[in-house]
Image (cartoon, rainbow, N blue to C red; front, side):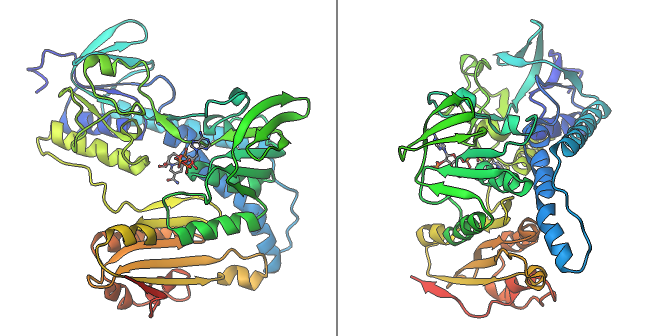
Length: 460
Ligand code: NDP
């Protein structure tokens, strides 16, 4: 194809996050396409630079205080002097630099041309770079991701978002987190574990909306038991600068002073000023790029993957979308990314792993009566230590007639690791009897997932 095309490139990718980098390097490295990529910030995007990776490292950091208590209970003579942000932060930054360099090397190794600047769409086959130059391409892939958004309220500029939390000069003593989604709940656990005094406001009645009620209920209980001041049906009205910090006015009529306010109030697709609508690309209500099942936009030569399309905002999903795009466009094998039964983990403390339908969703959508299997117990490791043990919850949502496991929800240590494997079974359409005839791995927490004999309740 390369010899015939009148374009500078076969593919121009805008945005070097997980999805864009994968699509660029596979298209160039494995199909021989001539590919360029533009990135205005850092290579690796949200996941590597300001999301999953630094977040998970902070989750690890925040867990050692509890582990030190447990270690003492197991007979270790450990002197604990507390956490030092000054010691951790440079190591975190060095690790992100290392990972970014790997991403760059992967692109170089695949022969992708890199442009370290902002790129926008000039027309169906032309990209305009920030330096004023233009490049033409047979296909343009928009993989610009998303960004955190703050609500429009007085003083919002005094608060930070997840983009800035990794770079604060010092850990706040008193922090308010606004929002009860993934990011808010994960950072509540992280900062609490690192020693900050954490208050979290959520406007609804229960955090982690959309997840299984029982699972999120347990997480909320354990977050409170761990010392997080989680206040539901509470929102912020305005923020003011105060000599002692930030004065927060809330919907309950109170005024409270915090050192830092973190808005975890959702994310928006990065399409502002991208020239997409002008080129004929259809955008949704929140600015997301509307694509078909193959990630193609209303302009046939322009495609979009990842968070900018606001389908499922998860790194592995963006990567899958990128791979499917390359298959469709550069291998001639049309492939739709599969968005069904995506296992996922939320790194709250306790952690949650989940795949398939929540009990509430299954009641609405399963189309058959349900059997609900649940078990809840204290993990052996902490029971022995006698330290404050966070309970483990395991739950299966089973179709009473089809026998299929429609949903699996795990709350507890390593729930994310467990759900990856349970996810294979659920994706394969395993029945409850398939789970039952699998021998337990003993002694583990995970064994409980195959030893739940009788339903806790039947519905419908
Ligand atoms: P979410 O949409 O998950 O949560 C946003 C939260 O902010 C909700 O609790 C929402 O309340 C609340 N909120 C929204 N607007 C306002 C407002 N104006 N005032 C007060 N509260 C408000 O977004 P996140 O930013 O937490 O995460 C974005 C996405 O990133 C997730 O959907 C997820 O896909 C991905 N992610 C995945 C992670 C993982 O896999 N572990 C980790 C982090 C992020 P309400 O419920 O009422 O709408």
